[in-house]
Image 1 (tube, one colour):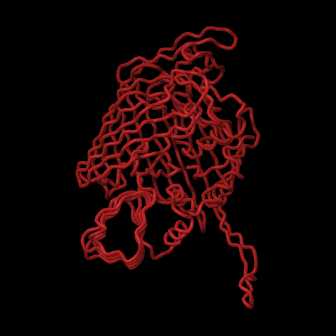
Image 2: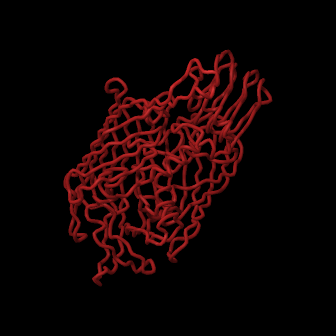
Image 3: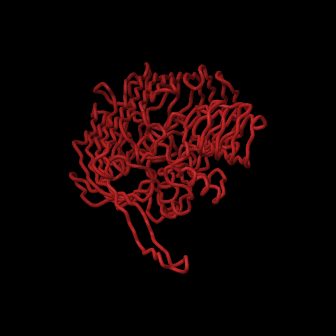
Length: 565
């Protein structure tokens, strides 16, 4: 049995965190423990108004309680009878604005404070740093795009950003990003961000450079509703990242030598347009990309346990120049809601069309001494990914979640490995081992001549897949202790109250492989099923799952810091 993140570690992390799981890590921005506790009390107060995105409190408006704004910008022209807290948001005060309590800003900026009357103190934490939610999910939030670029809450000025890239991994180690973030204000704001990427991993010398880069320029046309931009990059990216959060992948790799993802190198540029009307849950993006893709070998970054064990081999990808047209549509009516308390529908779809190009998977030598030839893929393909979910109440205290994810080539043809999909592991089919359903891509490693003798797998996964998940959640309370109403000493009154959720789930999936003659041993997975159960303490879930078919039927335990979906 392998665990994604052992419970003892996660319990220690949760115990040290002063805020609840649905909020981002305040301590990461330098917020003291007592201040974080005060912010949490305000968040828990039923009288507190919670606002998100770009909002305005008009000059004649009055808020009778505290206000918490997040992920955007709040313009204050009226009166707040309480505190104002901005979490990952900018604050703009108009002349005559009144805040009777304190103003606390975490990972944001403030303008116009000299024009306002503030009764308490003003404190800014994490200024100049780009505080990212550790549990960024596949559907993300509308204030960020898929690379973590901030797309809302524009403000004038310049900051120096220091942050971590995608996740700790066996190719880069800890990818540290640093550089300037410059922006203008107003409805037609412009933002320029240029980050250097320092790859801290050591190990075998490969063609992977120790430094990369990622830069973006974005122009706001109508507030944050319409934006156009361009990017240039030299980055190491995961082939798939939708099934696990970056924090989970990082902890698994850095602490327990279990990298949950595979990676490839991207160099090139792109231009895009994005539409996200503030009054709707709809977001759309269209992008043209001109890039060069390359395989990268696993190196030897630090890990707390099992450091003497070799890392899992990387897959070869289709190497060469590629031109892509990509489009994404997302529908999320409960944007910003607690991930464990969502209701209604969520949907996201992405399509990628490869323009005329040729991608080549390098050949190598198998462990048996056989020479494998180069495999040439047609870069003219159309691949998609769709994720549809439904969350609904199911009786008193219960909820039912249903999800269907499908993706792959829309034609019956093989895809270059960096566009394939693999199933198995805590993020998809937890009853099965990581990447157990990969359509035979990891049947046998080969030694690649281009990477100083490093071992690679000849592919990544299946050319098409479908995954269905259903999960029921219930809850129960734990009450321990006895309050003594006739006590003399306050310490004699003790009681432990805790709410624990429990869940049962079922998953079914299948992978398809086309043009099997390209790679010996390549084949579809057939139908795979697993089932399991777990308990959820705050935001942490401890689960067990078993496969219902296949060769391996043992129990697998795993821990998640996010909901399963």
